[in-house]
Structures are given as C-alpha cells and as structure tokens.
Length: 524
Image (cartoon, rainbow, N blue to C red):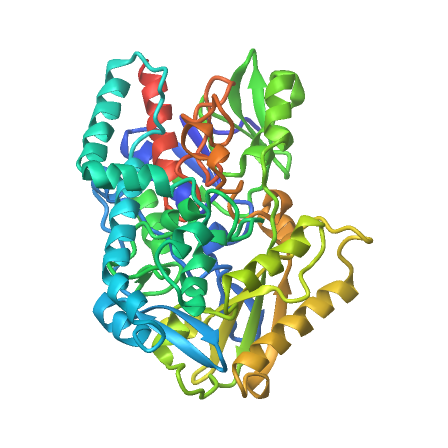
C-alpha cells in the first residue's frame, strides 16, 4: 500500500514541533507531525509517577516569542507571573526574594545594606540584557558572512537594537556574556546567600560550576520573558504545564495538518542527497520533500540519517557536541506540603535552592569533572501542584527536585540500581535537613536519571538542553559552526529542536525559525 504524500513532515510533538507544523500548515503546506510517544508535549508532557500524581520534567514552561504568535495569528495561553523569584536555604532559615525589587531589597537589607541598595539596579540591568537576547532570539542566528539583502536587513535591525542599549549597555552586554556567574555576582554583592540564590541559575542543566566562563550567559538566557525584578522565575501557564501544547495542537489541526502519536521515526530517507521522507518503526514509509526534525542534532544526523549521506568531518563535529547530561529529576508525592516558617505557597510555587553558597555549588560540580555523582548534589525544588492542583488528588501535592550534578556517564561501573537508590536517599535526606517534616509527608518517590531521559525522551546523553549552552554552542555555532541557520547538508532537511538556535527554554522558537527556513528554501 502506497503511503500518502505530504509537503512536509515534522518529527516531534513538543512545542517546537507543533509550532513548526503550524507555521508550515498556515503557509498552505500539507503537513504531518509524527510523535514517538502516545502523548504530545516532549519534555512538557506530564508523566504519572504514582496513582493520581502527574508531573512534567520541568515546571518552567518556557517563553514563547511574541513574533511566533504574531506570525501564526495564534493567541498564547493565559499566564500567571510569579510572586517570588527564588528562595535559598541558609543558616537554618530561608531567604525569599520577591519579584518586586523594592520588596526584595527590604529583605536583603537584613543581610547587607550595601547589597539591598544595589538590588533594584541589578535586577533592572539583568532584565535589559535578557531583553536584548529575547530580541535576538526572534531572528535567525546572525550570519556574519551573508550577502543576501534580507539577511543584511535582519543584521541591521539587530544592530539597531544593540545600539539602543546605549554605550554603557552595549559594554555591559559584551562584558557580561563571557563572564562566570561567580565574577558577575562578586562584582556586585557581598552576601553569600544572595549570590547563591542568583548564581544557581547560571549552571542550570549544564556540567559546569559557577566559576566557569559563560555561566552569566546561561542565567540571562533563562531570564528571557521573566517579569522585571525576577532573577530566576518566569511566568507559568495558568491552565497547566501542557496548556501551550493543548492550544498549539488544536491550532495545528485547525490549519489542516495531521498529527500522529505513537509514530516513532527510525530513519529519514534520502535519495541523491535530497530528503524523500521518513520510515517508521512499524515499517511504514511516508513521503515528503521536506523534513523538519525537532530531535536533538546527534539523534537527527547520526541515528536517523544513513552515514553515506553525510560528510565525515560533519559527523565528527556532531559527535563532538557537548551534551553532557548531568541533571536528574526526583518527583515526590506528598500527602500535604510541610509547614515551615519562611516557606509558603508562593515560595513552593517558585524555585527553592538548597545550596547556600557559590563555593558549595562549585564543590558539588567538582565530582562531575571526574564522572562521579556529587556526595552533596545541588538541589532545587518546586511544588507544581501549588499552581496546578489537578496534577494530584485533592489536597495532596507534588514536589519536584532538580538534581545536579549526576553525569550520564559514570566511572566505576556506571549507573547501577544501588547507585540510583543511593541518589534518591541522598536527595531525600538533604531536603529533609533543609525542610523539617518533609519526609513525614512522603507517599512515593520516583527517580529519573539522565539514562532514563535518554531512553524515555530520546535525549542524547540525557541532556535536557539538546546540547549545553556554552559560548561555543550558541547562535550561528548551534549545533555546530556552519549549521546555525537550521538547514542541514541534505536538501530538504531542517533542524528545529532545542539543539538549534535559539536553544532550550524558548518555546517554539527553533521550530518557527526552521519552518520559515524550509518555506524560504522551497520558495527559492
């Protein structure tokens, strides 16, 4: 039986895949989206880890660029801004920073008058710098070698945005991006707890410590779209962690596109250096002259494409991408939240970091350098049921712990059941020390190590980022130099996942840019 012929195939049903499919379908293309799992959502989908308890991998729902919704004519789901930016455990208590910079300064003043006076200016500075990155992320990655008029116009527009920062702002941006988060914060503050609260955002999902260069960029990257005054938390979808997925899936179908779940792509078919379609695990083949893959670059090029169609130097470059998954996730089902002074619903709805100093954060990272799990891992907590009660039975709660540094690849025999169990015990004990009464509320625990994320979500090395956000893997160098404009070196094949510009946490950004690149290519 011959398979139906489409104009475009999109691989992956996360935010990037859905936005790519919507963009292509709105342009009149016959589109089919293929998702390997039985549910859409990618990393946004919720998993049932205990009867009646569902949780996503991350409670940060990301930021959808306004240019995406404007282009599609779609409306983003309603969102709710956070009240608390971040909370850090220290000295037996908690430092909780409001998203209102002046209120946060009043709290900081108990630790340092100097730091309190600097806080409003510092948060405004971060917001301004992150805002410029947000403008840059709504455009194709800069191509400094371009001669195309359209690309030159885009570069000129970006240059105007850069100049709008002013001389001090331009200097600040160029100085801050390559800095370590340790240096950035040491320049500003003296309170160890305050620096720890902010600095942990600079090592999110990367195998680096706060003294590593470029970690200031990571902080700014994940602040795009955050409300003024917040240094960690972004707004969340009002109707649940998968609200964007639900809305985009409905929009995709309204444009006439086909969505299929439980359809795992095992090969991208190629003839004469040109894409011809895909083959599924079931043996079915689907034809189309365009394929947009939102899988990570390694999986796309090294697992789905036969090596005969790729240049050996390109394959070597893709193998050299730093994935280095080192984040584990532990989901806890609780009969109720602990009642602890300094921790209310606003704190649990945001980010609670248990690492009290940047020095402790650096020590936690040390073990990962030697392919070992830290004895004192960096742990950050959130309770998604404060925002979305429907994720658990009435009155009960979920707490999600994001745990670094737990490398995918370990020496001394690799991951074993005993090591996984020891990690769960270590994390639970650490939470219990910081939050009295936590273990008394515990009903069930589920541990996801990087190996699980590779198996269940198809993430190379278990890397939630699709490739670390190091300075040599951003913009036109993401995923590798020469492939930063989404078109891959096989005619009709495009990369539209988080492994492409603009990277993780920008909901639909890469998918939108990849689909536009595909449409432009077909137009030519």
